[in-house]
Length: 166
Image (cartoon, rainbow, N blue to C red):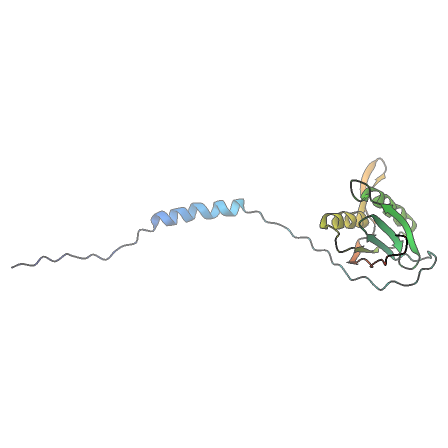
């Protein structure tokens, strides 16, 4: 009796369809990829606060972000201005105007410290840092970008103790 044997051929992989897919897919993915550029700002930690004295020749600008107001002051000279928060949040436009005035008075100064309370939102912190760092001024009938205090340090706001009557 004759036995029938199946002839087994080695299996061949058909990868040409996969290669065609890769040839089309790779350039498409590369062309639609979003390449982002990260901007990094060097920040330093603030120095210790010192005693309150009169505002003198050198400004050590400090902006404290509190829930109820923005407190702009000199680390040595004390509070310069308190900008209360309105119903719509902090008044960063008034902060920008004050920064322009301070820059005119202290043109060589580039450092500032922004101190925020723990519950300060990231959006408010960024808006305040933007107003302290730079702004726009009208010069010869056009708006020009001006650096106010680009060397920004950030830190935690000092904790206020509750006073009697508050």
